[in-house]
Length: 634
Image (tube, rainbow, N blue to C red; front, side, top):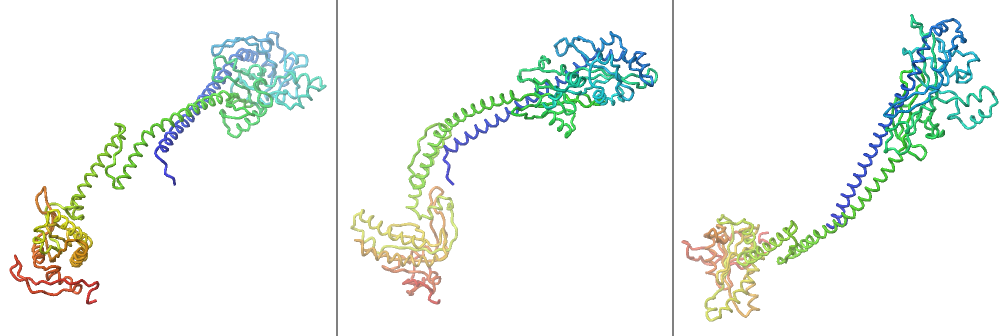
């Protein structure tokens, strides 16, 4: 997987942040716009319903009053009480009564701050008997009473309101759909227009499609028994409210017209200029199916009709009525909402694109200001890894990045100084001792350890250097000690100190190994061989003597609290030193403990017991000749 650099990550992070913010803003704004338009449409629909119902009460108040008066007339009640209802007497109304019921009634309608004058004309009125069956007027007054529809078709439609007679209310208002060419196929409309029937064709072509009907029950005064009913009908096509009649209810949020209509018996009755007949038929069919499926009295939903989207609202106008259910239907065009959403979307996308470009430029500038110092720091750390502790990074600012660069330089200086200290310490002490001193593992104090101590001294050094220049003496000593020190390290020995021409090494402290005594013996033999090799190459021919003793010693930091040296002390150390003094050129003298520890692994010959300074009894000593690669008894 490729490693992404810092600049790319920063630019990508800022781009994702801005893009996420833009998308989030777009979704929030889109939801807010949709919620605003839905709330606005719902508010308009509620005002539409309220307006329609208020308008209905206003325009029908006088007619309901006249119908109630007529239903209470004695002659009407008497005629309806007859076994055979006399239609001639029932429909023998005066001109004033006819004018009150059917004549052009001009009413002043005020609603929502808007006042208008309307000419309201009833198209027909009929009497129903106690069973809801229409009572046909005599032919002489039939035309005069309006609604010139065939008797069979009129009875068929009026039979739908028989349930109104059983309703406890004295008067009810409902809706009936009579024969009309609205929502009919073109072939049927043509057949009607070409009909030669003198009764059906001219009459039915003039019948309004939807009628608003007032049903007033005729009651027997004492028993309140229903004798029949008076039915008065008005064409509703002129009374379906449109936006222009709502006045202030129409807001600028919906510039497209509100399409309104009445849904009755799977037909949508509306102004064909607002909702064309094919669209009305589609709306009526699908909305009727939805109402039957959901059984909701009112609802709203989004619906696409053709290439246009609408918010559709419907509300039942006559609940608990004996009439067929009629629904107020409003279609609100979502074109303006979609245009507003698209406009806002492009604005947000445009501003988001500008923000993305700005974020990219800013990310590049910021990443440049951050990546350059970081690259310098990375390069400097690589130099330190290679051992170049003199590396420096430029401090370019005073912020956190600049402080980091300054801290890095201080760290490099500290590492360089520590490295110098470590180098000097390694030169004056063994590397392993120096490492433990630096880590704090060695402090002032000591511990008892099992160790082997080796001393190596040059024979006749004083006489050899008596007349030698100091520089040459130093050169000789350095050459000699360098070679011997390498041999000590090769055998896991710890170089304790140099004292003039004397070398002291420890095996088993401060770090123990499984074969410390064997390593000490091999080191002693190696020192002799190394000195013999140097005698063939160096202009200085030297002979050395070695002493090796093994046993308990006190090992640790010896000295003061501000200056101490790691070394070992004890009787075994003194013994090794005395053995070294007693050894002849090229000899290695070992003590009894070392000899016994290496039994079977070394070749050694005993020498006469030695009286050594500091030891009360003579000391048994052996001369080390060789070390076997494998134990002799194996």
